[in-house]
Image 1 (tube, rainbow, N blue to C red):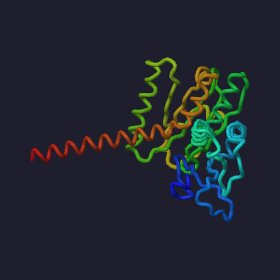
Image 2: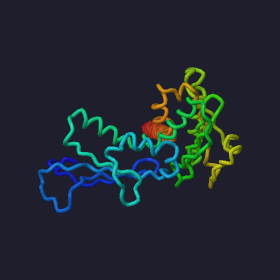
Image 3: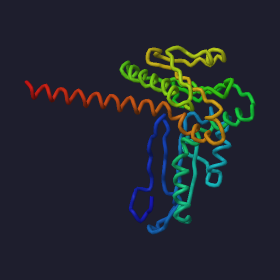
Image 4: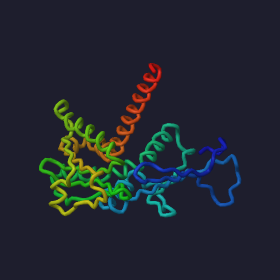
Length: 267
């Protein structure tokens, strides 16, 4: 966004999970100096923001971005304005990295909140993170005897994706036999008992395309040393799964094309 590079002054883009961003130069009205370096404004719309604010997300937002925080526009939920040109190269790099992680930092805030509750041996009521409300997918966090449980409702695009997903789930469950520190993962076609007990049963339109994945977050995963990584990687599990499903389908498609080409050579 350096004006000397003659780039556009405003960019809009979409991320996974219905999240959108606006990036633009914060030019004063009537500014015409082509050589001036203006502050950069970044705005984000996180659809599940209202649902997670009370679970540490609001505090996390103020803690990490409070000095740059401004009022968002056009229905967006977050906005920051930074003047990168007044910073050293090291400060620029750190600031850009922090702002680039705005989404994972906000989406992971409830996991940090749960980690603090678990480490302080405080109880908490189960709650929902409707991070993909447009597809009916959510993350439910509930207390457990030795930590907490994250339950994902995952929607597949078609029965083929579901078959590949089941193989992936099986590998995750088997990983615990090789890596003892790995979280305990279970998957089912039926709503887990934890959600039934707390009357948090999600509404699904097509149950045949949904699966429920339960991930036990033990004390080791929620420790002060590990909780930051947990808060970043666990909320991205659904996107990670679908990425591997697409890669698997692309690999199978390539193998079939190679087999077809070989058959045509023989014929």
